[in-house]
Length: 497
Length: 98
Image 1 (tube, each protein chain N blue to C red):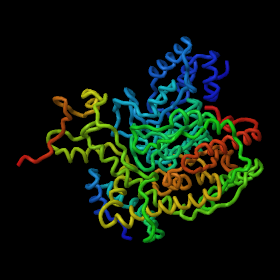
Image 2: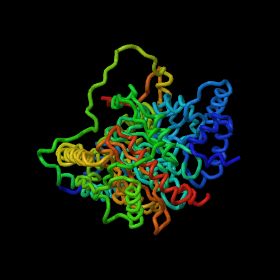
Image 3: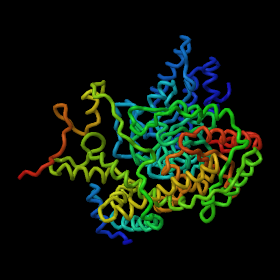
């Protein structure tokens, strides 16, 4: 039998539905793969062996009874450890939630279970999703399967590494400033940040509520679309959930075609700080889009140059408020409760012990930006930049159907290289942040390897809010055209672990 | 705009309920100064006539009927509590003795 861990999610679901293979066999193959390689990759913080096998047995029993199976029934998935899972530990990569067992499922988790997806476990991430490398995880970094001495991106580096190492064909991430797209770019996988409000935030541990958005990660565009359609949709448990039909992303992914499509190349995302090998692949792919029949023009979005600065005021401001809930009173870590310290002192001692450096930096930065005397200059100005960025997008989407840019300025960097230089780390999200600020939809697709280091390069595709289907149409067309040139999927060039 | 001093970091840490160690104050002061210097550039383009955006969606209150529905049991709600007593969260002393 073919190696079950190498199949796409779409093919796996077909084989399970037709009885060529059982869900238990598929799950066992992936658990064995995790056993074999995760010591090196460290994609998972928790493997839910029993839960996964129980779900797989349920799928096989359903099939045996002739019941209707979901489109991804029996397909294994790696879940970012930011979603609450009833009865399964959820740490958000932080010591402050070590050992916490949530009493409820996130809406995304409920939908996955209803679709008969097999959740293998919880993946590593930068603490509270704050970071671009997984080095801010309190449980140690993940390695990039292309080169284990390099980062798999972040914050969702555990999810991207799990896909790349064939530990799971599907994964879920969350994207506040690029945490789905940047890891996808750095590992040669596909990652989508849906339109803000497209996927419920209920049960996602909040970092920056006006920016956070859950979304699909996969090895192929169609697999991402299948997962997208399972997790998206209106949810009354999230007051910011959009009450509109989900765009038909699966049909778009099956119909990759860019003829007549107007594509805008963002002028601002190149130049100093961009790796030559990244720009080379992006330029070639833009040329490829032309050959495939797209009308390509340059589009200037001048306010994008201020997006990073605005983001590092808005996200920390919201996080300083959101993380106030970690007060050591109702759940999580409690330090210093010895009868001597007051509740307030216990809170401060617990947060000091339970939060890592990046979380502390951002909480203090947000506290600063929101404090009286500084509010207008910092948070107020950042909100105005957010308006300017939204206007740039509106102007751009008046001229073109989608925008494209590099997903990241560079390929995967070595573990440790930027760990003590926050500003250098923040630059990894330079190109992905504008879409979070405006709330539109964006995807990263692999477009080859950079010449100088042989590491994956991602192209970012951006579409207007609720036009997520355009991402899949373009992504699928590029995937097919690239693979026709390469003769195989890009991941087959990754070293075996 | 002004840089950020060690004393200011100590003040921010108190406001944010972080019991920072002395050596952390120096470390964070230098890093926060760096970051604040970089992000302060937002004011370059934030003209008077630009309205602020706080959220990507036009938010309105979402209402639902005020009726009892199934929810967490007291045991579930207290399951993550660091300490509990009589079906309540048990917390350290909040008010002083005097």
